[in-house]
Length: 339
Image (tube, rainbow, N blue to C red; front, side, top):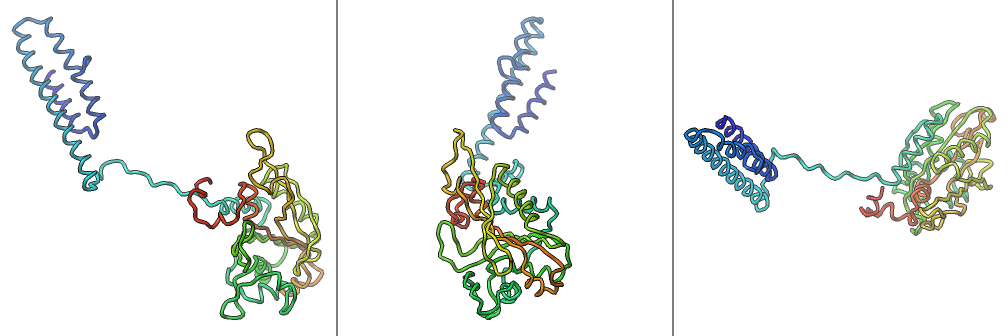
């Protein structure tokens, strides 16, 4: 029995990989209630001759276990020192998981928007960031020398017919050229305009273009779909209004304003974002102009549809109470780790 106990203890010591495990082994065998300690205390109840023989053997085993624990402790101490001094790595030790990244707030809002529109039957399509003058302007009822071109501060490339798209609307024409109604799509993507940078404007920004074409499509359909989208994104308390606007590729055209309010922990409206509790324009929209249908080869007056373009940064600023658009592109990890 004593020999079996010794072999068991020495095997456990050899396999111990940290000081905590060695301490547990010491208590298991040599502690006040340890297995070997109990054997030594029970020797007083056996005959003297037998007590002497078992006592000597038990003390020898105790000494061996104690020495084995000390030796293993020194080995582990040496390994720790080696790691600190030479960067030695124990490949058998459990690995350290890398820190997880954080999704960008624009990516979060884009994914939510895509999910909401897809639940309403819209397909997600993409288009090129480098666009032609024809699709960015001409096909959208903005011919050369049209005064409306001044509304888009365009980055022109060396090839005079190429540019960085100023909006996602070119995909309206590109998609309709290859697809027949009825159709409903959204087009998320990055756009570029040569604007002065401030807390609410930047030279690059993200839009989601929306297009729905069919028979007897009206402003009522647009209002219902957009209201449903905004309620799912911000909650049922969001308010929406339409104002008259102007876009060459829609007629009539309108601006979409929303009012969002959030309650802080005290139950009062949050003051973290100056835009909360006030009307803010987030979307330009309107009924697709017949000249756009003509440019893509649709029969005039046969189809009706609406189109809209919403800014993802503005939605993210409202949803997450961000007061400066430049934070999105700062690369500041302190900002990104909040999401």
